[in-house]
Image 1: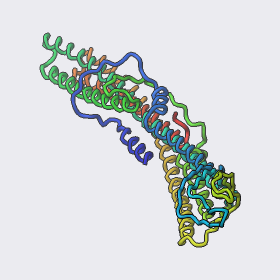
Image 2: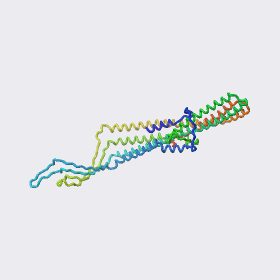
Image 3: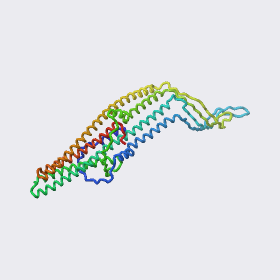
Image 4: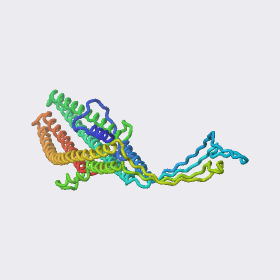
Length: 441
């Protein structure tokens, strides 16, 4: 259930680049100290409630192991009692008086010790079962940390994109306002029209609206980051622009093999398979005999001929419990355990197929992202060159201000496109790392 919540939370944390939240937001003063991806992941994977909850499950697992191992130890208890009975059997002997075989007041204090001598390996199997359960819990902790790391990475690079996109829009606004000033001066000399001024002002207004949307989207992402970090939702945050990620040091044909060995889903499937096998072994021993030794020792009265004098006494012996018929419970428990093994095999195969698809998709997206980066770099280079030519033509009076604005807009859009392509490439790298089971934290 906890992993299901983490997966749902992770999906909610995956923003789609380019889809911005509508609305109005005031400009926010960013802190001078920016956060690195590494520091955020370390903080989240250490102090997030989901991680702490998963870690607490390890304490529960240790307690279960200790409870199973307790069957190796004896059970010791102390009991005491007092009872008064009457009438009691009495005989009368002439000239000697009356004699009773039991006293009216009966006292007893006893220490009882019971120890299992042999249970055909049932306790051993129970301990192994609980230890394997702890291994499964450890793997669950790793999976929780990996999912949270993926959520942090998605949020982090969305913030990087929004921060840089706002800077690009600011630069675009600065350029447009410079154009507006220039056109207004030309209008005074009669070399520019009111239409050119209005068109430039419309462009400025549109860019300002886009910037507002970007700022709003950024506030939403900062709130999600604060939620991950456990900080107040209005805490101002700024992240570093870090797009340097090393490629997984694996050949293409080794990616799927590495994923099968290292991915949390496959490791969990293997742990569940071992656990199911141990549970079957443990269940099959439920109808085996159990041999116990017992010892009781204490003090009580009632021993003839001095029935009121307390005396030390003991009982020592062995006992064996042999199940004969349990209403077919053991049979159906074994059948259920066998079915769990077969079901786990199918889950493993489902996970294997999903992993193959995930690795292939991540690798294909990485290659496509690399091509888009190269194409965007070329596009920016061409747009910058075209804008330089447009400036020269505008200064020479060959083209209008509107054509120059088009060139400026093309440069800004190309810068945005290149930024998005680089962030998509970085995200694809992390997805490939995650797909092959490499730890992101």
